[in-house]
Every structure is written in C-alpha cells, then in structure tokens.
Amino acid sequence: MKIRTQLASLIVLISVLVSPALAQNTPADPKNVDQSIDTLLGDHTKVRQLVTDLQQAVAKHDAVAVAALVHYPIRVKLHGKPTYLNNAKAFVKNYDHIITPDIVAVIQNQKYEDLFVNYQGAMFGEGEVWITGFCIDNACKPPDIKVGTIQSNTNPGTKQPSP
Image 1 (cartoon, rainbow, N blue to C red):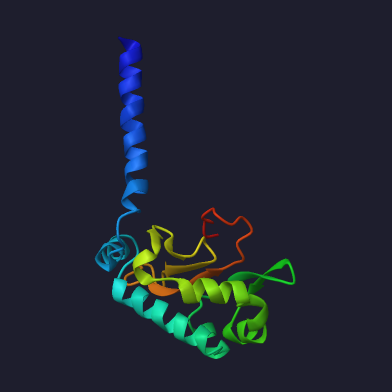
Image 2: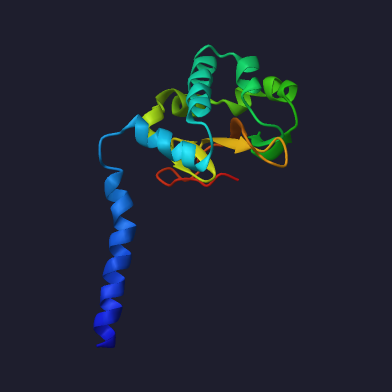
C-alpha cells in the first residue's frame, strides 16, 4: 500500500512539473504575458514599452537611448572581466563591448509574447537580457521597470538566472 501511495504522489508531481512545459508549446498569447507581468512585476504596459524602446534603440545603435533604459549599477563583462557600471556615461563609453552582435540578435529576435516571466523579471532569449522592477522607495509601488541584466550566455540551450 505504501508503494502505491508513493507512486501516486510521484505521478502527481510529474504531472505538475510537465504541465507548464507542455503549456509553453501552445501558440504565444500576449495576454498571457501581460497577466504574468501584472501579477509578478507590476504594470505590463511599462514592460511592453521598454521592450519596444530597447529594440528600437538597439536597431539604431543609439547607445545613449539604451543606457537610459538600464538600472544602475549594472554588472557586465568587459574584456572577460565582471565589472560594475555605475551610470549611463560609463555604459555609453563601453556600449560596443556590452551590446555585442550576439546580444543585438537576442534583443532584435525577442517577441513580447514569447517573453519568459517569473518573479525575477522578463527574460530575453536564454537569459542574456532581463527586464526587472526596481524599488525606488520603501513601498516599492510602482517599481521602476528597467533593464537589470545584460550578459553573454555561456551555456546555450539553458535559461540563465538573473543575477
């Protein structure tokens, strides 16, 4: 009897874990992303606008516009070494080392309705870019929605957690 109970528990656990994976194979729906963002991060319209602004600024190679969308300090890799940039001026100076061709491709290819969303933010690609809500006061309402992570993906095919 104990084995049946354990087997039943295992089946329930597997079905819970597999169901979300199967759901991701359904056609993308921006309303689902909107709802996830509203629940986990705040106002989806701010995230949607940031995605659009980021894609347009990157397409124009507008370092100043991209830098304005980033939360500081931000940790990036410069010349293979993790580095913190404290302001937009430092970001603009190092733009071409941060927004590499691989990062450009990830940003340009990301569709809003395909964003992966969790409590940490909205993820582009395999974790190369994360949009996150940052508290600007103790109430943290509303959070400031900015780019919080830009990183090269060293393990293609796996989702990278935001730092």
